[in-house]
Amino acid sequence: MGSATRRWFYLPVGCLVLISLVNADLEFQKGVLAHLNPDIVPYMHPQCWNTCSLTLLDLSQLKTERSAEAFWEVMLFLQKSGVPGHYEVFTNIAQNFWNMYIDCLISYSHGLGRR
Image (tube, rainbow, N blue to C red; front, side, top):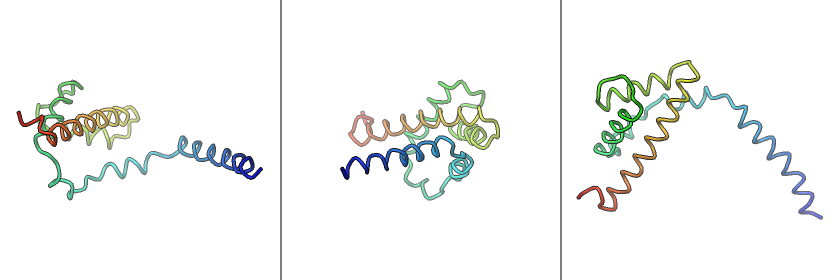
């Protein structure tokens, strides 16, 4: 009997949590993402960072010069823009970058990138 009562208690609580996540204001997340922590720079793998940035620049067909710095300037513009469509494009490209960057780091750590 105790477990059935717990289930009926946790079901509405879980639904409330899901509803609150769906209706969450993304302004806080945008503010957190807009701040680039300078402490992370020494830990970045520069070859993976530049390779992934240039690959995504080619794939996304952004109209900018072909450099990692220009790519990230466009990404910061998309992130800080007030247009909802820009932020969606930013999150999609950022997720793709993250996936590519992690794959690159894993291949380097396993010695596949040193050939």
